Amino acid sequence: MREVREKEIDKASIYLMISAMKRCLLLSPSFALLAVWLALAAAGIPAGGFAGTWAANFEKSKFPGPPPKVDMCTIDTDGTVTVNETNSEGKSTSWHYTPIQGKPVPVVGRENTTVTVTKINDHTNVHVWNINGKVANSKSVLSKDGKTTVFTMDGVDKDGKPFHEMVVYDKQ
Image (cartoon, rainbow, N blue to C red; front, side, top):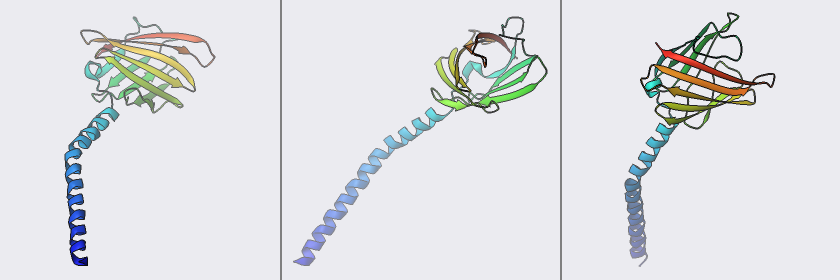
């Protein structure tokens, strides 16, 4: 009698294990799709028409102080933004970040700075910058022909004074 019960228990355990494995196999494509979606969501915002090298057009731009001598921006296809600047006094800096839709990311090369980028459409991105605890808002608008980008930024400078900047970039 004991042997019959053990066989019944073993059959029941095996049946439960097989059912659980079948359920896992049926659900795993859903989990795989979820994992792929999460990986894509964590990836950078694709650059689309913003991809390329851009140079500031100083004649069309407006800066809150003396304009820089050099302002070049390169945007990779994965959305990584690299800026190379030489300020009006001749000091060169380079900084970069890879945006993740709606999430703050560090700006490498600029201390205590993060940026949160939100893609509005193929021609508009908005940015929220946190620079040393002060918030600034900006927008990048790509022209319909893809040859010009206008970057505007509003915020408060290190002395607490409001500023507005408009930089027109020409695609190189």
